[in-house]
Image (cartoon, rainbow, N blue to C red):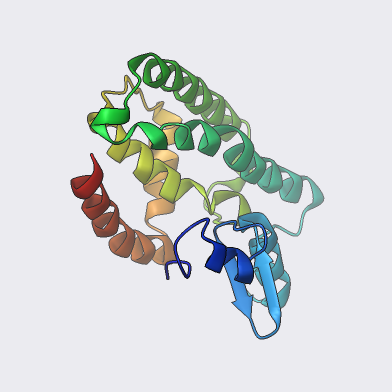
Length: 184
């Protein structure tokens, strides 16, 4: 559901002080930040754990999550101000394209070094599907020079088959396409 008043609005900040998305509002609790929400849900519903039992695998899953939230997603988000044709800066777009390509190579290496997490969907995977859809949509619009490493491509295919991810993407993709038709 869209935030009241829109992202960053005064109305939304009255509900979620940081105005972060996503936010979870449940009973008298408001939690903002995807990782905090995921960990809360993991603890509230332990029958479907989002973190492995093994100490090392939990650390690897958290590492993956933090890589998404602090490395890859911010590089993709930096392109958002350039979606409208009248606001595009080709130099910034080219620079971000290179940064994103570097991050995808780093992710490929991380995936190669954490094969023990293959077949599991957890906390560290939650942010990637939407970021990948954005990157896919931005590539033709902004003319990004994007190469998806094989490991990342295979990972993306694997997580997109998770029923909850598949269902979310079926809703999200048409909304994103509509957004691009209106703004690109």
